[in-house]
Length: 210
Ligand code: SF4
Image (cartoon, rainbow, N blue to C red; front, top):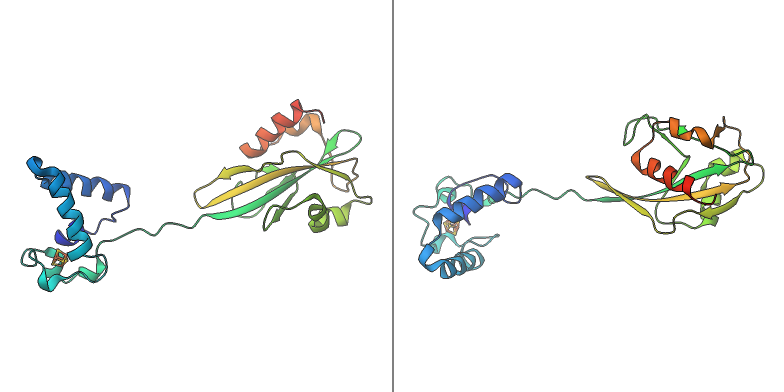
């Protein structure tokens, strides 16, 4: 209602908008009858200056309403659309050979964590089980002769929150595996630049019984 009456196009749900409209409301409030004033403003917004189809023709403020004067009723109030948060499911494959070696690969292309290292990644559409990890991982099918012993390091996914996506991450340990890629001794993995998520895993993993 204030956005229309004063013809203000600052988005009402932005940080600047919340501040601006709060300051305006404080300036306008009838301090002696603040509760009645607030109730009246709310009712005016619900019954007269409705979000859709405000009743301007019968509005007692129509002579002084700036949005009506400037023909901008349908454009106000401005509201920012909330970005939809995308859920992603990352399965990191932590290979372990009998010689205590593993595989790391560099993230290529644009996107999060570009250029950093990670364990081979299998992204899935939801949380998946060990069977699906083995079945869906081309890496397993192409590079390893015998199916490895597979176990889940963290049953509860680690949720890494970024501005437009939440990444549900689980680490799978694949033991006694052979792989065609250049192996990296486990003792050296901390020398590689990795995302914090993986660095935290490495610290926990090194304290575990594997
Ligand atoms: S004239 Fe219309 S837009 Fe302006 S305050 Fe009244 S109902 Fe709202």
